Image (cartoon, rainbow, N blue to C red):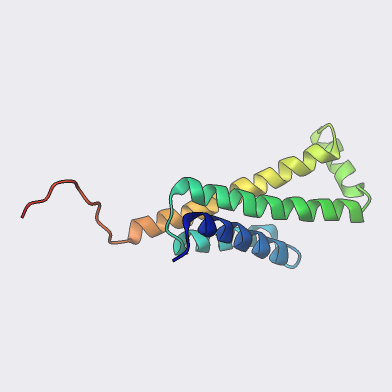
Length: 130
């Protein structure tokens, strides 16, 4: 059986690898499907699911955005910060990676909620009638 910490780290790694691999070939929104599936498969608390989606997807987006920014010499980023009136390219990258991480966390919570809706487990009460 996997411990709670290992389960959390495994979900972060799965989210990050999936986002890193598929963001380069598919649209951005496809990344939200995998945290949803992870939320259905793993059964932990909501905070743990949100944090693993936030960290996994957020770090993958951060790495990909930094890589894209260095490859293009900040041409695209400088145009976007002019349009959005943001102070620097670094803040733009932080905002975008945080928004991706929050979406990943919410997607994983949605999968966990769907699992909780359709699961047949009853809550155990402290009362026993024997």
